[in-house]
View 1: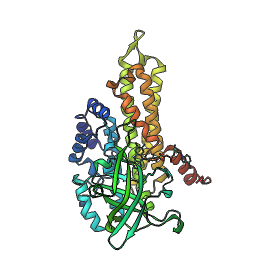
View 2: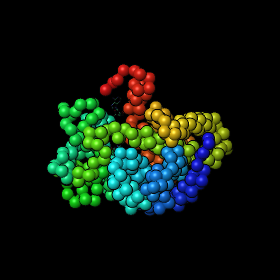
View 3: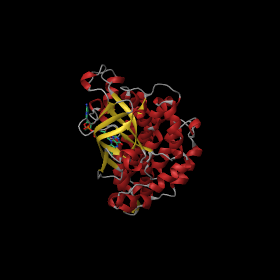
View 4: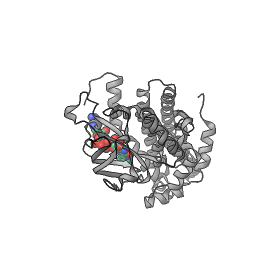
Length: 384
Ligand SMILES: Cc1cc2nc3c(=O)[nH]c(=O)nc-3n(C[C@H](O)[C@H](O)[C@H](O)COP(=O)(O)OP(=O)(O)OC[C@H]3O[C@@H](n4cnc5c(N)ncnc54)[C@H](O)[C@@H]3O)c2cc1C
């Protein structure tokens, strides 16, 4: 591999060493946000990797950002607490006005402003984003009024700004299937003073995810990013980056599970021999390793194309698909290798097992990727 970002990897690993399994287990128990970890990543500048230097970031490519997230997961940490700060600013960067970029990006780069939340999914429409119902109605020259509900809006309690996708033209009046939706940059601090309420959702992982309700929330008209009605396209533009970065997180998880399992298989002695001497134990570890290396090649290829400015939709989608399957297979293998001890919290496997399962569902489910590959890459009939 031409550039595997070894310096970045070592620096991230050194930072993560300060946040061992016990730190994550305690937070997991109490369902608390890993503020100290996120603060440390922010101060180190890693979360600003993708922001151009002109706006105070490091101006690195997606390959470098992927290396950062992979290392975080590989160290047993949980990048899901803050990965959005890295990439959702891409919508602002690509489609925001010069004024919006100058106003927000430098502060996002330093962490003075947190842009951690992304409100797309709704309870009634789910994966069918084009059917979302939250609406933003123009009210005079200076405002929009937002009504509706989002679900699974993660980290909204730990952010200053959120990106919101809302309908600005009723579905019955749109000219193209993907039209009528718009993206807004909402000031969460102001919205919480009136018009927006947040209800945390208890889940099987410590993910700070919530339901968000909008009840006549007035937002300034200049919260709109880009042109009204083009929001879905703007969101699509950011999806390849998201797929690649989540794929990299899965690769990191996979490597964590494989190392744990490999070490345990060498240490744990039963029937007078290390359990790893049995091929029934050794082969699943080797298989998970092979699966992970293959998925990693796809993540790297997608990142290479992305950074070269070439189309990478199929590769980014397949990277996320293959990496999430590799990490889940590695998680299951690690559980099996540890036997009963896998269930003991102190080994941290059950936490990572729960956490990595998410990626076969969010931010896009496996089936939706398969339908993208089936229909857009292989040219088979559309199902929806
Ligand atoms: C912990 C967590 C955090 C999240 N964070 C965010 C966030 O920050 N912001 C945000 O906007 N969203 C977030 N999400 C939402 C996430 O992106 C969705 O859960 C995901 O896209 C799947 O949508 P859904 O849950 O509505 O499932 P549904 O769309 O209801 O689908 C249910 C199942 O049916 C399958 N399915 C649906 N349609 C088809 C089809 N046509 N063909 C084949 N299979 C189909 C799906 O693959 C899935 O397995 C989060 C979710 C979770 C669980």
